[in-house]
Image (tube, rainbow, N blue to C red; front, side):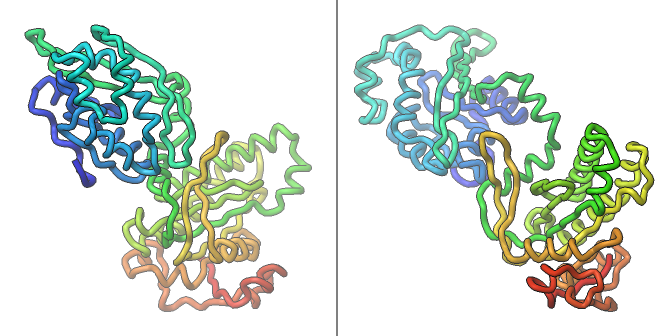
Length: 400
């Protein structure tokens, strides 16, 4: 099975129903017939095998750990399944496979990849129970990081009782309570967008920078606990505005927010530019509610915004043991920061490069007319910073 289509359902109705249910629920699973031939892999299994950026090829009809399966697996994205990992897999499932092989050890030796045959000699056949679980340490990232995986093998039987196959379901070795909390802390739409940039690359995008003005006097005025609560409310609402507008949240630095609106996910450059402007407006409106909840006046929470277009941004995801975030590199990122620093007084300044991406329909939605806008170079703004005059003096901007 190649390409980005879902695997066809198996012919057996029990296997087909199981495959459809597991795939619809987003499980990471592979299904095998009674002879341990591959009949199905869920989209999520193929996605993880494809390095989280594509659905990996899957050898339907191949024998599990046979030459075709091993050759295909070793080609999966990022070298995720070197031979050492496949050898561990056969060691884990081999006792059940040996028990299911009519010709015993000699037949199993002939079926598996030649590089795994020595493992067959050490196997002790074990009649598989209806269900069993084990922890398997595999390599499931392009960086080669080891990950503990819980593997559960379930024996599938039809309504009359005969065995129709085995399903192997995998999940990271973390409890569902932790997974639920991680899910609850994030927006599923945003998590899916982050997966789309798991592989870094050149991606045209609108860039939004926002920051709180006069944060230092405010921090001195409020208690530490109150100021922390304020920052948390601001970050949560700002992130939600970005996500609702179709964007990707970037890093948080102090009271600042960075976000990216990709043309490839928005559908067009115009849609990405529109979403960026809509997000800035939404954040500004949200701060009124944040101020009220924090017992502050609206003028105490004044945000300034810099909006810019990056035609050649290099956008990707950085994941470490402590966190995962989306970031971008390119001159336009630094330029966006310079625009934001000049937008004092709660203004939202957008570059000419951004506004001229707008098609008439999107411009009308924003009540803007890019054909009639008058721009001002950053260096000519009375609020221009020294860095803006030095690094981006000719970038033309207007208020949106």
